[in-house]
Amino acid sequence: MSEDLRTLGEFGLIGLLRARFPSPEGGIVGIGDDAAVFSIDGRSVLTTDMLVEGVHFDLAVSSPADVGYKAVAANVSDIAAMGARPLYALLALGAPAETPVVTAESLINGIAEASREFGVAPVGGDTVSAPLLVLSVTLIGSVAGAPVLRSGAKAGDLLCVTGSVGAAAAGLALLRRNDAGARRLLEEFPGLAGAHRRGRARVAEGHVAARESVHAMIDISDGLGADALHIATESDVAVSIKAAALPLADGVPEAARYLGRDAWMFGASGGDDYELLMAVPPSKAEDLARVIRPLTVIGRFVEGSESVLEHPDGSMRPLDGLGWDHFL
Ligand code: ADP
Ligand code: MG
Image (cartoon, rainbow, N blue to C red):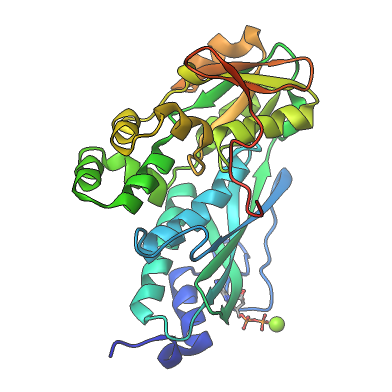
């Protein structure tokens, strides 16, 4: 039998983490004491996001390393959506005692990979036994100038999105289908499963958007339509999105055709793309598109409270209900 967490114990597991994430230089107290200690310049930006087995990930389609990576990246994405930079992380981990040590090591490898990629230093956390694998990451970052809030959009602003959308949702749908045709598409378009397993947070883009004073920003985690609606609601305006304008990721139309679904729906309602949505005054849009590539105009903010999605057939439908809600 391979070793599990009962052989390692809580402090053995913390020891692995401590060895992997030594305290950063400069008087910083990291893993090993009662609390972490550091100082940061600028305004502090704080966020937390939890991944629960069976709700946010399925170990049949994601490796423990993917889960570790995603837990860090999802939080980095929220920091990026404020126009801030990520700095330090706390890792709260729950795992069944029967979890193989190699699974825990793989999880730590994923955390380490994302931490390196996004410049995050894990400095503490908590470790408990739990009936399922749970990883909650708390991230602190800093923003030099003004943070970009959800509430600043004005009627007349353009709704712009970075990168491409729909890959994470289409990838998950194919991974779940898992028949020969789905596997062929996953092989042909590796970006689809990649987007589901390891979304890339847009830190540089968020930073540039803040510097260029976009009016409002959010990262796409609940789904593009739902997240655009969050900006509209917080800003007391409405938003109108053109489905035909969505920059669908490579392979999304092919996946949709295979699965008998609408391609644009993957883009409009799929979560976990971690692209950034911004409210941009029209006078700034061209300049911004020169420094954030690609940046696509997909809609417009308008007066009122009726947010709509214009379907490719020209019909207008309410934007409400196009996203992920844990309790519905
Ligand atoms: P305490 O009992 O004082 O809360 P713990 O025994 O829970 O301390 O943790 C010891 C040290 O290990 C602390 O510095 C804590 O932040 C760190 N730690 C515990 N679990 C994790 C984890 N999953 N990831 C990173 N650091 C952790
Ligand atoms: Mg203590």
